[in-house]
Image 1 (cartoon, rainbow, N blue to C red):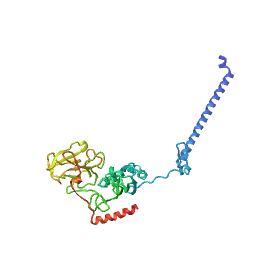
Image 2 (cartoon, rainbow, N blue to C red):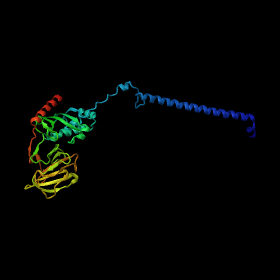
Image 3 (cartoon, one colour):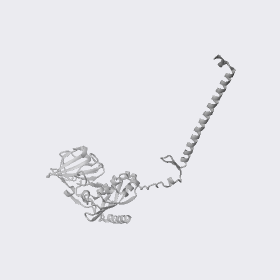
Image 4 (tube, helix red, strand yellow):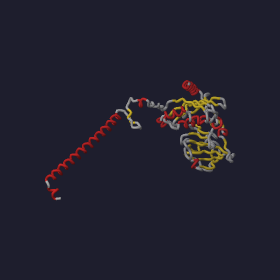
Length: 361
């Protein structure tokens, strides 16, 4: 063993082996570093191509501008500008609401407008306007045609307006009823001295019945629901009104109770008519101005409209029942009078009809 470590020849071999090992390790290190640089250059090349407008597909291929894949891509879909008047039509095949939900034209408009629930909004607005002429669940027939014009209300406009507009508003509606063999034509129009726009038939008479001389609310926007127009059973009339709008007693009587079942009714008032068993209910109020047992006269302010209880939007629910809970239609119990356009308003309305008719041809 001493010989192996002391022999000069052996020391020479050991030194040469060590030098050879060191050189091999250096060479291996250089090879590995060069391989890494090559990978970086490849990545850099792909990144550079992407920076110039190319893209990588799901299968890893790089799409270069001008390639067949890019040329065959679908063109960008049109976006409907807010405020633009849109003309559309549907035909009832299965049911009234399905006519909107399954219509290809409405589905396309929904995509272009960015309003995902456009079909539901349209059917709700159209149905709201038709409650004065037909009962949708009973009177709609297969083949009934609905032509209409609507617009998307711009966000800035919604913030400025005082009538709480939805995402859309109906400008014109034409309903071709097979059951009644008639065409119902309705136009949105604002009188010069009116706070809110209303809806009128082509003969310039308002579609809504107006309770006179003492309505439950005077300055309302629209009647949005009447008795029996929807399921579950609706036992009153809904007046869309700005929160805080004055609410008035429609009869002489006594306040029987207030603010009961507030989870559903919100702030509310019930009045028994003098010398009669009829009860008058005012629900979803923002405030109550009377006390239980108090005598009131028709035309006297008793509270303010609101959005309390089980509601989806501000409105007054007005209901009449007998002492045996039999529902009475307010538009049959009270006197009503139509709102008929006259004078300068009538002239402007007739001109408006001409504009609409020329646009929809």
